[in-house]
Image 1 (cartoon, helix red, strand yellow):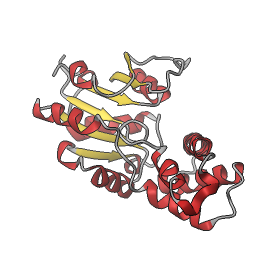
Image 2 (image 1 turned 90 degrees about the horizontal axis):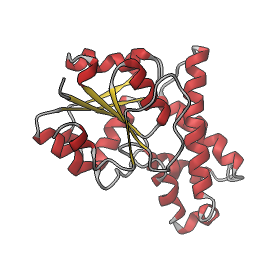
Image 3 (image 1 turned 90 degrees about the vertical axis):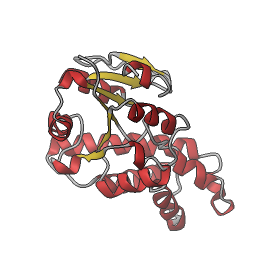
Length: 228
């Protein structure tokens, strides 16, 4: 079956999650972050994901913005930067303005020009996703932003991936799902989607019941993979 629908994870896939820490570090009032920002960004992202998984297992769902703030507080304390409320607020403000990777607009436009459905499927709350899409200027090349808030549980629960078929009425094997998270791509493959893992860091493949169908280093190859 041909691909009719291309669905993307948001954070780390379309949007650079390290951008908030990197941009804050460039501001003269936050010199303490000038060398620590890569470590802070890594800790922030790692805890953001682990808190979502733990809350899913514990049955204690909260919106992703709460998870994001909790993860930042842990990361700031870990890096010894938890004594500056202004820095915390600036990092949170910047998270609503994350930069898209440079290849994203042209890639999405190619998919839309070819008549494919395009969407985001994310742990992010609707308000967070709307802000990121507007900031990146890609709203005109996306048909929808699907959030886990509709089902009240985080990825990789199958109910999250069900949102795609519910929205677009397409069978699983017509969906190309793209994520920068190896575990997310593996879970989507196990669910029945065609999958591409955008492995920008060159990480090993996760040892899980399924593996991504394709591994890429960025998003430029997605249109060809979708048959465009």
